Length: 110
Image 1 (cartoon, rainbow, N blue to C red):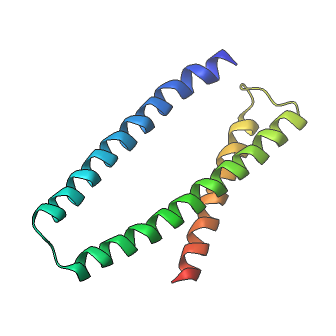
Image 2: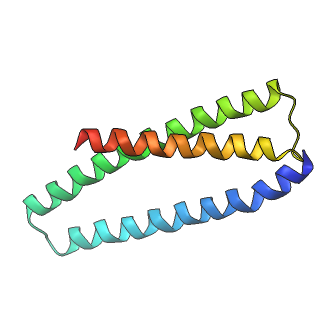
């Protein structure tokens, strides 16, 4: 269990750093639009695109979390350890399936 945690801690830290930097950049862009008095149509279009992006983002991460949880359930059911390649294959397959499902659902929305 310790080897998995030592692998996940840097990954989670990097993801948190990326999210923080992205939020700061998006906030600065929105502030710049407000300062330059951009047209109402432009602000509305950007806001609608941002709402659609958030919706798909939530869908993608929801699918990834659910399928990862299912994969971890199978790993526990089959008594696989961190030394078994099948455990990693099962987890990566579930994540890949979640990304594919998210892509197909996003294309269906147009």
